[in-house]
Length: 233
Image (cartoon, rainbow, N blue to C red; front, side, top):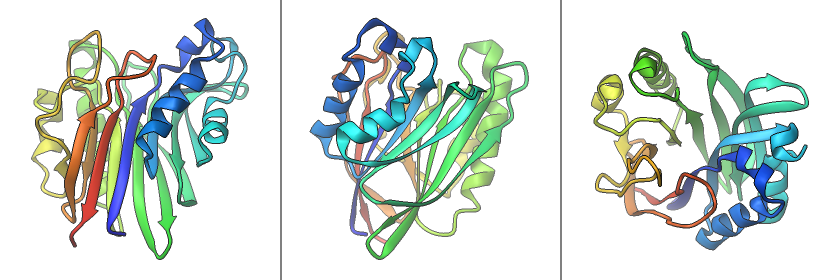
């Protein structure tokens, strides 16, 4: 695969409660960027805040993409988690719990996606929310993510809402690792209220970043991050 367009998007799925057209708006933002693969966070499956919809399934239908949902918390009929949308083929998917002492459960969704004759490992995650009280949890989660990335068999991309900027102390070990590159080092803030860059795309060193930008559109409190990657090795 020579080129891959990646979008990371925290859709703030609970806001669906306030508008029946919420997912249509999210889908239009996604479609406008024509990504090959999308990592979604704060995705609801069922429940009153989601108007009983399976948000990942609905977005897949609206965008014409394949999908997989990975539950982080909740119970059948009212779940919250991450999801992947793709124009490729999802050949396998698993949900890996992340350590979350004292905070709500968090996971990483790992999908093996095929594009013609190539495959990539694609990871979607959402780290612990909160300020200093969540630092210990994010520290453990970052280490767990790093351990998982080291198990990748080939090209990989990790996207997610890390709830911390790249220079945060609790992410120091992750950022010091040499097995990946942060895509778009000078990118603007991604959270409209916090005015911080807390949504990331990272990829193994075999990729180069041809384009990276924050898409300032959509109804979520997060702006999506678009990265176009070119394969060099």
